[in-house]
Length: 210
Image (cartoon, rainbow, N blue to C red; front, side, top):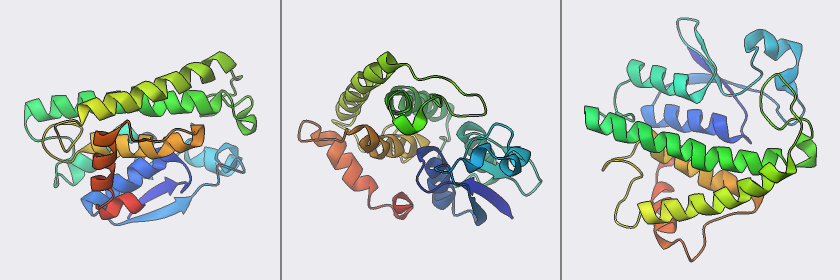
């Protein structure tokens, strides 16, 4: 049985949960308490020395410690529905937009949060190494989040999905980013009608409640 090391309050493992749900993949779940630093303890370090979630243990015993690897494995192991595209053009477009959702969305929010939250002092980056906060990066992150919402609203003006004409991992990453932005007090508003329409449509998918 596949095992997902998860944390229900964190955005990165939510991406993996949605992916597995969309694929209909049965799996066991082990919760890792990030709030109390369980990911930094000796027990979890023995599982994943990178001290991050998600991590996914495959049926073959391979440990995958990031969403890129998890997505690649799950798509190859369970090819339908195809969430990374079917044609070469679809695969390229989805890969490009998924990267933008990560870089311009999730990383911008993380930049704002991790460089400002008192609870994350000296934890400006995830993982086993401590890094000090840089307040200027928090300020820049907030500006980037605003730009991200504008990007999504423009992108969705005449389309139903982030990439190609079908649901893909780019939509999963975008949903998680948009929802995660609440932690830095950002959410779509009336100035983002296309983004709001898309998010309402995404909410109809059962996986999005995870």
